[in-house]
Amino acid sequence: MFRPDHVARGAVAVVVLACAVLTGSPPASAFPAAGLPGQLMFGGLPRTYQVHVPAGLPEPAGLVLNLHGAGQTGAIQADLTNYNAVADAHGFVVAYPDGIDMAWADGRGASIPDREGVDDVGFLVALADRLADEHGVDPGRVYATGISAGGFMASRLACERADVFAAVAPIAGSLAAGLPCEPTKPVSVFQVHGTADPVVPFNGGRMLGRGGHSDVVPPPEMAQRWRELNDCPAPPAEEVRGQVRLYTSVGCADGTEVVFVAVEGGGHTWLDATAASAQFFATHARPDEERVTYRRGDDQRVFPPLRYVTALD
Image 1 (cartoon, rainbow, N blue to C red):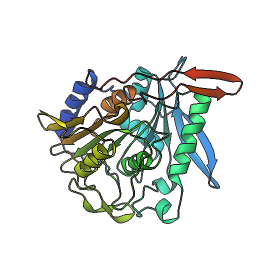
Image 2 (cartoon, rainbow, N blue to C red; image 1 turned 135 degrees about the horizontal axis):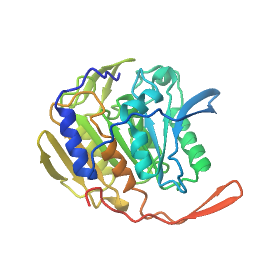
Image 3 (tube, helix red, strand yellow; image 1 turned 60 degrees about the vertical axis):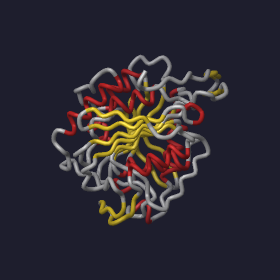
Image 4 (cartoon, one colour; image 1 turned 180 degrees about the vertical axis):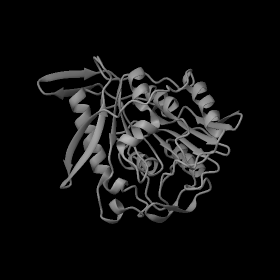
């Protein structure tokens, strides 16, 4: 599904500006390797991933699962997004899992994993649990992002396992039409989509991806659905900066926030969302979680709740 050639020139620079507005700094420019390889047996299948842990990290500030688009791999996603750089800056552990047949069971029914009943929700939750255990990550600070099919998968994780993921950032992706979305907890969402996306239509409906046709929720409608699910005040605040329109809803249930970024003329690409999504994650841990006792081997640790701060403060 993901086509790197579908980039609207000019839109990328505009989103860099939006990222600077949200984070106070531009994305880094280096492109390091994904990290150490890992394997997890799940559902009778050897599932692979790469993980990056910032050097000298005494205590991780969070865990991010970064999901590739269809026809890609975790290593390619690491190079595309340059997430290791912001992981180092924020103190995140970041993992780049590989989908079966370079795709995800994201609920659209168009991929081989979907058609064969692969449990990617279960796999990604199991991976998050393993990495949180191995690296001592606060369970209230686990996040997911992704592009295209990976964005659809991140949305599905938020719908089905909001108990695990405190915030998600789907980029150039939405949700399969007809897929239930009934999160058990409010979840913060940072969603970015180009109005001229030739693969995942801004107005939703029928799309043609790598695995065939599927029907998808219009991205603006999906953002509104999240506002309703999170009991956000209406309408969202609108901010226009050149070709970038930001719609921000704060004061939602449990201190969650929903941000929808529409890029006029933006195509089917990552849209330089790295710095902004990382900053969003850094400020959106579950704010009212009870203190969590977490056992890692013989080492018992207690994590206090993190106070809520908005990404625009």
